[in-house]
Image 1 (cartoon, rainbow, N blue to C red):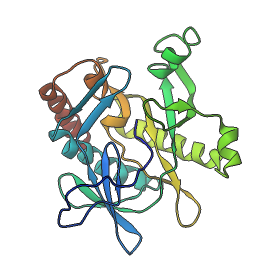
Image 2: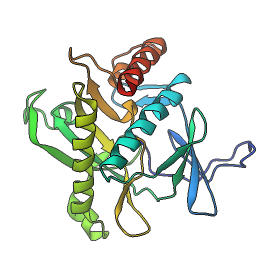
Image 3: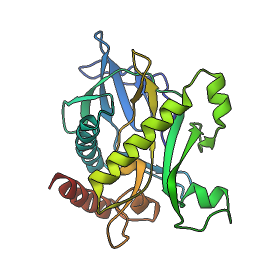
Image 4: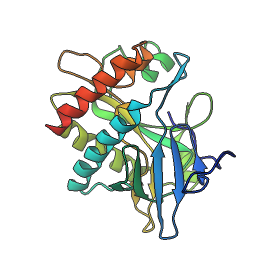
Length: 243
C-alpha cells in the first residue's frame, strides 16, 4: 500500500526540477494550471512478506493498465485524475491532494481479512455485497480506521463508498472473465467537492485471478516470483485487457 504523500527528499534535479512530492511509488511535479506530472517508480513492496525491489519494466506495464482502466471508468462517469500519457512511465493528471487513508473494496475474503480477523471468514468467502473498508496509511503497515474518525474530519465516507463500489462494478464488468478479488484506491475531493480517484489502478494495487485461479497481480511478487516471471505475467495481462 502507498504511503501518504511526503515532501520531496533532496536529490539531483532533472529537466523538470526536483519533484514536489516523492512517495514510495510515485514522483510528482506540480504545474501552475492545476495539473501535475506523475512519474511511476517501478517499486514493488510487501510488508507481510518482507520483500522490497525495483523492477524497471513494471512501471510501463502499470501505466498501460491504468491508462486503459481510466478510460473505462470515464465511460461510466467515474472520475479519475488521469488526463493523458506523457511517456512510458509518466502521465499528466489533475492535482487532487491525497488524504492519509485509502479505500479498499473486498469481493472475497483473503489477505488482511483472514490475517487480521482469523476465523471470522473462511479464505475465499465471497462477499455479497462487497465489503468496503478504510485504512490509515502509515509506515510500516496500514491500519484500519473507523469511519467515525473520518467523518469527524469532514470526510463524506458515504460518497467515497459509492465511488469505490461504482469503480468495483465497472472493473469487474471490464475484466471478466478475470476475477477481481480486491483492490485499493486513494480518493480525494476535486475542486467541486466531489470524489475523484487519485491513485493509479493497476495490478500493483489489486488481487486479480485468471479463470484457472492463477494470480495476475502483486501476489506473484508476494509469493516469490522472479522479476522475469512478474513482467511476463503483467505483459500478458495488458495484452488481455487490450484485446
